[in-house]
Image (cartoon, rainbow, N blue to C red; front, top):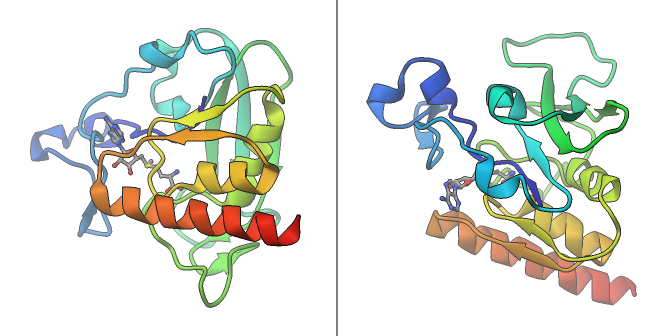
Length: 188
Ligand SMILES: C[S@@+](CC[C@H](N)C(=O)[O-])C[C@H]1O[C@@H](n2cnc3c(N)ncnc32)[C@H](O)[C@@H]1O
């Protein structure tokens, strides 16, 4: 299970009474007004959860993956320069450096590489996560948003199951994953 769930940030910031976490004043993340409960997922064989620093108290011991979003660039905005994922089990903590700050991006630049989701992750980051997991079995992302984990699975030839509650993001995810699968077939 590799996922980037709603973190419960609106709850953590004490604005839960408004119902949803506001992103760029217009976009909202379903489920983000409540504290995220990782309990249903912890018994999966392999689990990577992004945003887990926001619900770390509900998690057993694990290792941490830090995504360094500046990748050597000097800090220049008011947003976080790093994001954290929890990986079930024992092992060394790891850093993944990949520039992803506004228009400054190490990947997915240019025409046809739109930003589809307010908390969209880089495909390269999700490929790194999948490589951290055992190489057998299907990857599931129960909160797939625009389908980045599914695209990473298509690129790596892994079977994938994704869920998304918002129909518009579900449609985007299906399209992105199908495009990646077609691309994979062209390359193969
Ligand atoms: C942090 S976003 C994931 C973004 C994704 N990593 C990407 O690259 O696009 C979490 C997603 O979970 C979805 N979600 C929230 N509650 C859900 C639920 N109960 N079932 C399925 N999806 C849900 C939200 O609509 C949101 O798109």
